[in-house]
Figure 1 (cartoon, protein in one colour):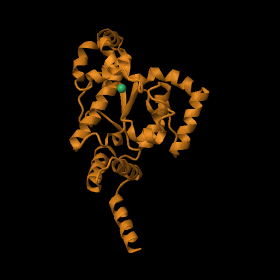
Figure 2 (cartoon, helix red, strand yellow; figure 1 turned 30 degrees about the vertical axis):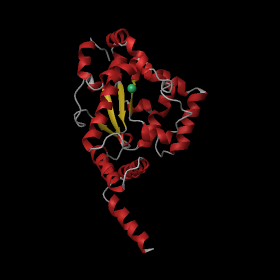
Figure 3 (cartoon, protein in one colour; figure 1 turned 135 degrees about the vertical axis):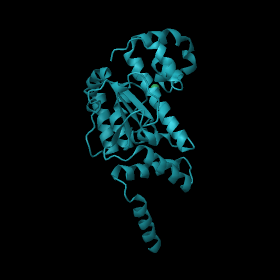
Figure 4 (cartoon, helix red, strand yellow; figure 1 turned 45 degrees about the vertical axis):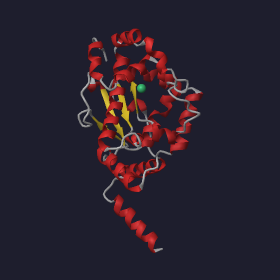
Length: 261
Ligand SMILES: [Zn+2]
């Protein structure tokens, strides 16, 4: 009884001053870190870094910029709305069916709760949403949405189109999925920013016909190295380009031409 009381006091003290999203974030973060086999001291340090660096708003997704994240500037940054997931379940609710629609994964193999913990980021172009909305009206799309509602039990509505707020693209990052990838705070930041670069390369690829043409011609021969039967998307030119340039996206400038967003 006494031990339980002490534990409760500790928990209350630990979460004091945090908003609802921060508390949820820390709770989920610890679950993941534990599953990765971290000891409790490292686990606490990781989750507190992540919370301090990425969480703190009252909204489930926090609006951010490359500057705030300490990331480089890239062409057409202002065309994208960049969001950080404070609630990983909201991130999943926003993107799970979109991933399924694009066949980026097999929805039958990954549940929305797991998707929320392991998906580092995604990007979507406004121009791609018309086909997605039509797909969401099909039985497969409706089934996907029902699954998201059932598994994630979100208390607020999620609308991918609405989240673009009129921008040409949406980029969303999910910091909780980076646990286990980096050992220090700086390594986690770097990994998040590489994902931001990767997603921005997808955005540029989607909007720049000149870049698409160049990539199709120049990267074609290397495709086989990226062929992956478990991830059909991995062998596409779009994905290949992002992997090749994500660590040095400045090289892409010469290939952009005049992109029309
Ligand atoms: Zn990608």
